[in-house]
Image (tube, rainbow, N blue to C red; front, side, top):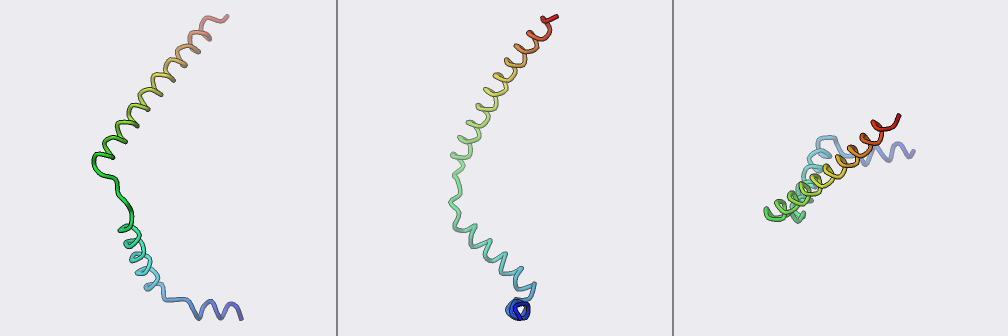
Length: 72
């Protein structure tokens, strides 16, 4: 009985696909998109952070390499 109810209220697949894309487009229109300047600033922050992390990990690697090479 429950199975019959679910199939009776289901819409055709084509209608569901079209409805999905309509809802997705409506949702994207409500998104607050960042400005070009905000994207540039965020990218700069990420690049600086990546460079600092690269240097820090390189130093840690060099220290451990120095310690392991010197040990007998």
